[in-house]
Length: 217
Ligand SMILES: [Ca+2]
Ligand SMILES: [Ca+2]
Image 1 (cartoon, helix red, strand yellow):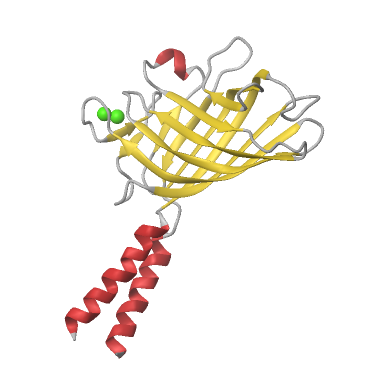
Image 2: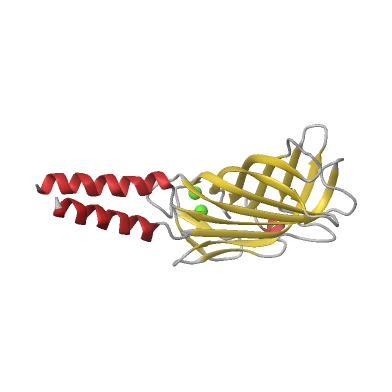
């Protein structure tokens, strides 16, 4: 029994260690728009006359895929798209759910689901706080096995053993004179995310620890 306890403890320690952030991303100056007839908010990378998106996707402990100013014009594939619905708007808060897709320089994607809450901060400040789930990579086209920044940098994919990770996401834009009471477009929007290994994969560490303990008895 003592061996079992020790192996389980080791499994839990491994769980704690592997719960560290494995991936982060951040994009500023996305083009934010809202259609009040459908309740759809979208923030998408742009290379516009008044502002252009930039950002990065970083594998912690590895390298950063760089998305520099004007990347949508330079790259045939690179993109960042966040689709978040707006429902249950009571003027102070609203619920938001949807998906995001970040595309690398040759068409590979990092994508997942989003669920959270919009917050009316007053003075036109609009915040989004949410969680991500089912976050994973798709190596599209040629199987190059790397997530490539349109302006350099990259890292091997997938970053974790599972291709279904969780995380946290925040967003911000400022819209003078309103929350989601009417349609709008062309709002500079920033969105950041941090990704963890999914709790499901952590539980598996504990289970494999238990199986190991049983085998040893
Ligand atoms: Ca590929
Ligand atoms: Ca690639």
